[in-house]
Length: 315
Image 1 (tube, rainbow, N blue to C red):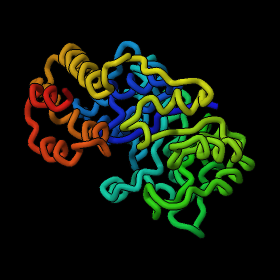
Image 2 (cartoon, rainbow, N blue to C red):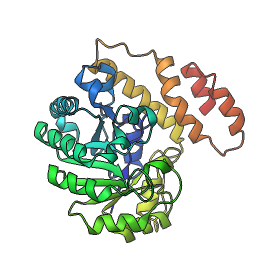
Image 3 (cartoon, one colour):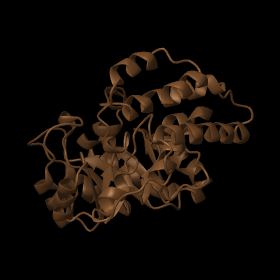
Image 4 (cartoon, rainbow, N blue to C red):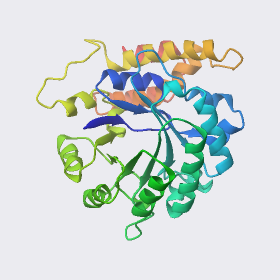
């Protein structure tokens, strides 16, 4: 069974993906890319699709509601298709700003539209097309079987299912029984998603018959979770030796900034201080959570503005 880093906005950039690969992930997803922004030439959106040397397989995920935007985005991504293993449509993000635009989990309510979006994606790239979605808008309103059928008819090659409803956001019961029904009723390979943190969670996913599991939030403070869950009978040693994950993350982040400067010479890339403080801020909260002095560190993180301050906090 494959262990996959789930797409997470503001988190699954190239530096973090590289850490997760080194921590045992078999595949990772980039942050979800706005099809509309990409179609209209937004350069910072292209930064989300940059990769680093040493990364393993990466899937590109887009979100959008307009067929024209999705088609243009697929064509542009096809120009850099060698970076990716697949092109995925997000039909599961429950964030209100995404849903208000008719994208993400809003698409669950319209399987026919999902079919059309996947179809134009398949027509405009040679990458395999996949769908990531949820069970339905709310308990009692399942749409997943219609969505799986739409994906099959559109030529999709895989289906990732967050085994919750949109109304649950990221909490509450994971519906393994419903996930098993999905596996039994589609010819597509199914990836299971939903609060995978422990060996028991992995066993529940395996019992549902999925071919892989996506790990999201549990990886944010623990990039080695993939190796630990893949090989529970083996002692998990850090690929970075005695160096802390936070310090490795910062190192990769600064390397990534140099890649952006080189590949986007006409874009305004933030200074080292600005880039590091913004990008590391959200991760540091998680690396230090539940540790002695974490509350004081969180207070300090709210005022971090320079690379030196970040290095001092990590030290």
